[in-house]
Image 1: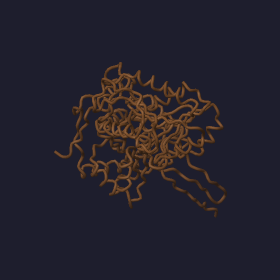
Image 2 (image 1 turned 90 degrees about the horizontal axis):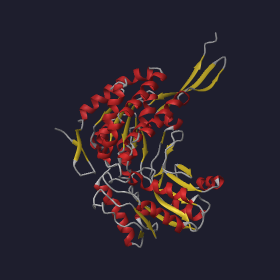
Image 3 (image 1 turned 45 degrees about the horizontal axis):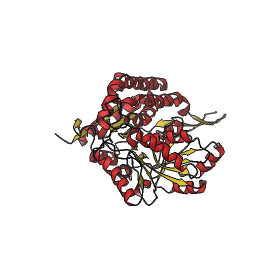
Image 4 (image 1 turned 120 degrees about the vertical axis):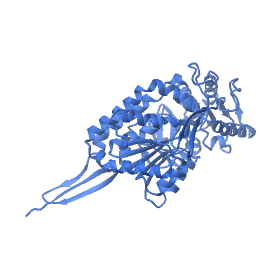
Length: 460
């Protein structure tokens, strides 16, 4: 037996699922077969590809009663939240709806002598490396538009959510998408890197850690294979003096704590105008004290364990370091906190940017809150980060939000909301968050390449 991939459940620390990884030659053979099928898939009418992809999406939805507890067992999200199908369907549906316009030829001009246009053609074989924190929604961001655009797609999922790719592939195959067009693979890191370095893929979309993104870029170095990365975040919220305080507290704290803080665009630091600071903290603490930490299979649980003990260990380390440097913790340890995957959600004040909890990605249920005196101080602090995914601004003045937003180093500017991915907008980042753009018309542009046609007519 070769390498075995194991999903350890955060509920009880037991192995929930395991699969044998493909060896290098078996993986190459599978990918070669998919490459051979790509031209025929791209030659199908666009509306047929759209219909098959959306049938696959619906087939995933039909599995939701099985998917929700399975996700709880694999990565700890409470069943009370019902899974990811709503966002999964929303994103795929939007990309299906805009496909004809987004993939249409760009007409440059036609006269008596020349016809000129730019066509969007598929990249070819697309590798999607998906993360565990929102395993269905992050995967469909690329899977749906890549298939609709005429690519074939190889899906490699995180070991923590080992069964997601397998379930997606089964649903799509049952809906009529050929296995040679879209399939799940179980691969080890070394095999994945070797395949990328050997130009097995024409485009790689990776969502995960900064280190993982760097590994993808190193593997692709010199191959000219396109690599899109969506990596870490340290997303800020800024509450201005004219904000709707109750709405700001409710949304930002939910953005910080939902999914045990394991959200790509979760709120990890909050800056509050000094006139609202005490009231904001008081309301935030009251919300978090009302959470119920526990087994995610219990419908009463509102915050489950972190997906892995090592993730919780990093969050605890950041909190302990901050407390040693003078931070104040506002939440007493919950009785269910076991010192392992079950972690008390925490709010910290008296924090500074000298502390890792305000600089490094936490990716857990902790948020630091600082008072600021004006927009200038808030902008400086929001930009004092190695990451740039989203920023959430709270004010009644849209012009002010736009002016502040123009100065923030980020991929998305929210006003009076947070922690949401709108499929009509480009999902992108800057700095250590990576590069690339998913969803929207730009998502289609990245999953295709431009091909120019300059056709001279015979006039004699």
